[in-house]
Every structure is written in C-alpha cells, then in structure tokens.
Length: 377
Image 1 (cartoon, rainbow, N blue to C red):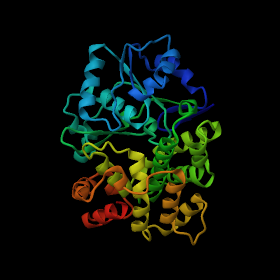
Image 2: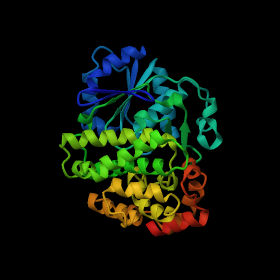
Image 3: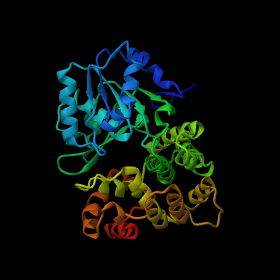
Image 4: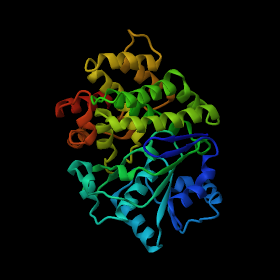
C-alpha cells in the first residue's frame, strides 16, 4: 500500500477503508460525525463505513448533502455537529459531501457568516485550525480529499470557493473498492473532472514543474493509457478504478497551481437555480470550447497534452476533447441539461469574478465568456 505524504497522508489502495478506526484514534477523534448523502446511504456505502469503525462509532450522521452543497446545508449540519458534541468528521462521498464536511469543520470552530471566508473576498486569511476531517472518496474526480478548497453555494447565490491549507483533510482513505460499480455516466463525468483538473493546472501560468508533472501524468493515465474509458465500460474493472482514483488525487494535487476558464464557467453554471447541474459534466462540456479559445497561449504545453491524449502532433486538442466526451457517453451540449440562452448573462457575471478565472492561461473577457457559452449550448 502506498502512503503518500504530500499535502496530507493518503492511505491509497484496496482495503484502505479498514484504516478508519486507527485514523480516528491518530487524530484524537472520539465523537465523529459522518457526512454523506442519501444515495450512498441507499447503496449501503454508509453502512459499510460504519462496520469498519466499531471502536469509535458515529454519534451523528448528516446525509442531506445535495449535488451542490448550499449554505443552508452547512448551517444544518453544523447545528447537528454541535448538538451531539462531535469532535471530528468523516466525509464519505464525492466532492459534495467532502466540501460540505470542510465547511462544517470551519463553521464549528469559527464565527460566521460563511461568506467572510470566501476566496472572492480573500477570506482565507481568517481561517485557522478547523475540526479534524477524514475523507473517504467514493468517486474519482473531485480530489477534494487532498485539496485546500471547498465549494459552497452561499445565500447570496454565489458559488463560492473557500480556500485554506487548514481545510485539507489530515488523513484521506483512498480505497478504489468504494468506486466499484459506480454508474457509467457518473464515472465518465467525475473522470473528466479529474482530467480537466490536470489540464487546467498544467496550463495555469504559474511556475511549478513538480505539480505540472503530476498533472501531465494524470491526463496520460486517464486518457492515453485508457483507464477512464475502461472504468466507464466496465465498472468492476479493479485496475481501472485504481488508476482513476490516482488520476483524481493527482488532479487535486496539481490544481494547487491554479485552474482556468473551464472551471470559472462550470462554477457559474452549477449555481443556476433549479437545475442542480453536475460539476464534472459541465467541465466536460465546456472543455472543447475553452481549449479552442486558449490555443496559442501555451503551445509547448498543448503539444505535450496531445501526447498525453495519445493523438498526433498535428491533431486538434479541442476536437480530441469533444470526441472523448462522445466516446464516454457524456451530453454534447448545455441545452440538453436545461441551460438556455437567457441564462448566459447570469453565467458570465459569475464566471468573470470566479477564482479560477484569474489563473486561466488566457483570460476571457465578458464577451468571450458569452461566446464560449453560446458555442457550448
């Protein structure tokens, strides 16, 4: 079993979940709260986690996590945490439960409101030590188990990113077993999220060769080596699940370097009221248009990314991304998700002020963002 100590300690391999009791003991947590969602409860994943931590049972469970956690969820989960005298959290799920757990760990130890900690107001400087978190990812995409951020929709309607090293879970249990049998469409969408974390991190203009190397490896592992396609076609492929969980972890490590316009658009679209759009799916849809828009801004990186996609030097990277989406069975446009042209202005308003916009390899103007959305509709 690999033990990776970069930003935190990640127990990575089949069977890692069995380290939960020991991990809670290591962090001094005696009254943990489980944060998850209804789908994982129904699938039996929550019961599986409960079964391996008999020494330190959960004193509370919050399973109302939606696909895009909102401030109201943070408030409710924090109240449950405090009412039960909890002293730590176990986050079980994809990005949503992990991000929600991070926000609860923050609000259980800090005075609100939540918006004061947002990256858009440089609120990270107000964040100190938070309640301890153990992250158990059940998808391979978000990488929140090793990232400094949490994304929450505030009462104001902004999909805000909260960033601090204190939000990195000190221990992550990355067990590919937890992803076996994940539906093909969700595997594809979360897998593309991991791939795009790697791509945008590589393209971000800040200089960090080690993180770029991690990003390139993540793209190559998922795309050229074919592990993403294998995981989508056969949900029980253990090797594919192992490699995609690694690509997901790599993506989150790499995006400490920055993200870009794909994520700015995805964050802005994911907050649209009533639609509850999946983050990874949005990323996949926006990727071809953004790659075409940014072409020429980093030609050497584009050339290396083509190798990581397994395509010829003369091939078009944006077309390759579009074709990959199609092979994975992902939607081909935003319209199929319910996004309409009258929403463009709202998306642009939030995208151009999103944190990811400021680290883009080529920063779109408001008109550019509108054109990118039109091209994806």
